[in-house]
Length: 245
Ligand code: UDP
Image 1 (cartoon, rainbow, N blue to C red):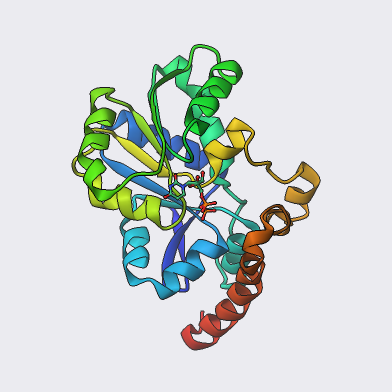
Image 2: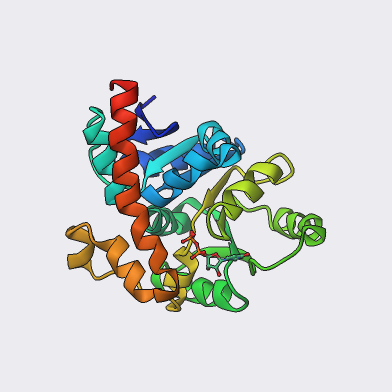
């Protein structure tokens, strides 16, 4: 379908935003039970040390290149990557199409109240959109069956799971068979940004490929995350050497 690139053992698609949106639309209309993951450098680094996450990403129906690090790694490994497909932007593009397509959407994840705020924002930005349900992302295993029932009762076309990496990927993968939903996407902090709880980097920083720096500054409790990018660059250098790509 698309050229793919193997980055530290994770297969990532080389595609444009438009192709990603089209593919997501096909999943929804095709009535499959598909899963999309959005792989930034941090997720790929994590998968390199977490076999289960790696397996899930490699079995996902589509893994898009979210982040400047992923695009750099792909080009460095010899597979030209047309552009970055940020999860947040992919979601906004799909939400924009939803009213016309009559897609029903469920927002699952983030702190109590956030998904409802994100829903209100979506209703304002995309008139006619049908966000059929919300559920916060804090729960125990014992709650999972009830959450699945709640999601299935609303018969969504698209489920956005914002539980953080790797919780969202692991939860979706484990429950995909039970979810009556053609497309599920792990969307990280997307609902936080839509709700205005978290800020996205200003456009100039996104363009300068500095979104990772912005996140590190905005979440100083996670300054350690700033090291993820240089570590990733080092790991990709080694990977290229050993795999002769
Ligand atoms: N989150 C959640 N349940 C959890 C842990 C996190 O719903 O058990 C939410 C959190 O509130 C945030 C989102 O997951 O809205 C993304 O979290 P984080 O910043 O840790 O994600 P990452 O950047 O690792 O994807």
